[in-house]
Figure 1 (cartoon, one colour):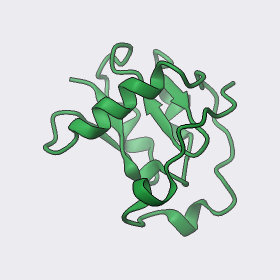
Figure 2 (cartoon, helix red, strand yellow):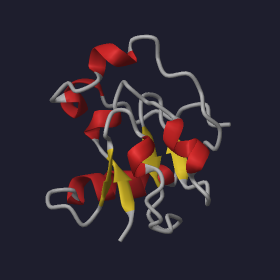
Figure 3 (cartoon, helix red, strand yellow):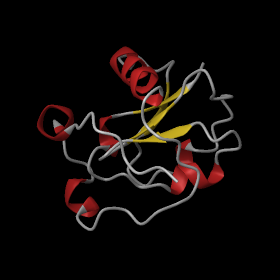
Figure 4 (cartoon, helix red, strand yellow):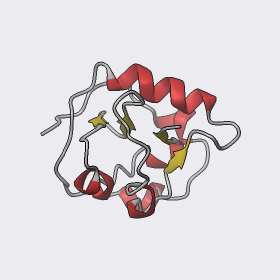
Length: 112
């Protein structure tokens, strides 16, 4: 098992999760984070830290797409280990459906 970041992170990109990760397995895209599934130790400390409820165990049904996306982008996006301020408009996107099709960006973020 590993944890994955889901659509709820897109355009919210809260980074509370990266601060508690003991193995630094988060990677930063332009408008979301991902978890490297081969680095995640399945400790689960990140899941309750996410204000957008975007982190889920990959054992939940229907998360295959997100496991694949996390795996793919963790290989090319920069590592992030320190909390940053969320985007100024993060609250406007928190809880919104259909964000992947409308807003997902494959571009990398800044990382640490």
